[in-house]
Length: 120
Image (cartoon, rainbow, N blue to C red; front, side, top):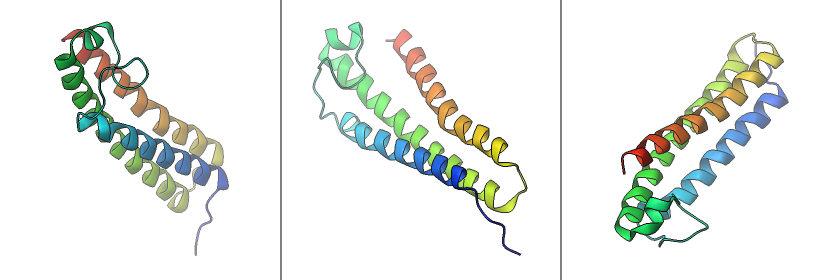
């Protein structure tokens, strides 16, 4: 017997996939060192903006970490869809879980970059 999927879970999974793709797209130029120091895009702090060598090093690191977090987000989005499809979790639990799958990786990313910045 096939179990149905909730449209809210699908919408949250699509949101997770979109956010991950956007983050990867923004991170690739950083990893490649193609983004010069600027005030609009990149890992912008007083330390990174003060020294181009620190800027490129920090942005390569930030880009790699962001891509890694994006891959984790995609895996969590797939897990959310599988949980919806093959378990009997109620829709509200799936919504909370889905939002956590989107927010927690971004918080971890922020924490990792904060700790990295402290060691510059």
